[in-house]
Image (cartoon, rainbow, N blue to C red; front, top):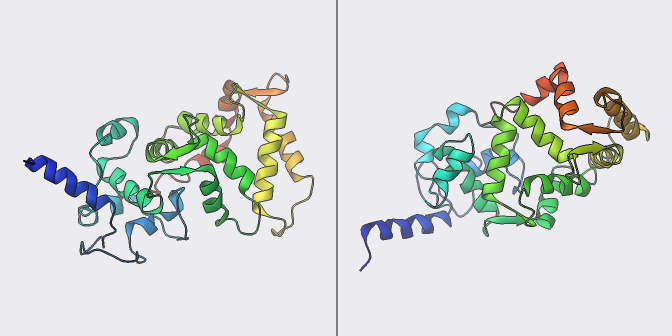
Length: 253
């Protein structure tokens, strides 16, 4: 005979596989423009359509919307400890992630396909590959919701040092603890490929190389041809433009 808690757990699991109107609680055949999923579209790696609006802290705290979102009980408390998101925020993020990734994970090819929709004018595949590897912290070849939530927490709510460490890890392609000129060249070419050739004003063919030269002139303090994490942190923390850019998404959620 099933216990009351078992019935509730089964009910919660079933709810995870359905979409609900955040205001009425009624099942939806298709998400409308006001669903939680679409409001988080730009923040989720598993998104298929665009939305220019973002959700601020007060929106997320709205109990009326969040009361209809369910989350599997396993691991939620651990994720609260690992991230700077509340339980309710994690529930919202999980709903959007699961709606777009029913299996609960996303592989690299799917990630690339989804990411390419944000940059139709260029080729985002290489940069998406680098980004995917930064999210795939365990090198499993897939990004789980846990992987996504932990990285998103760093990007949006981490300390300055946390954010810079995450960026350094993205640029350190072979994860050996330093950024080489070759690695930064690959990164810059991937960014310029992603932005496309039809930007205004037009970018010069030498732009990626010029950017790499500027990066190493500024970062490589001892001129040994590589940038270490200490050099990266010291230089970035003294650069006003970099510091401002790190606060860009502070109120995104």
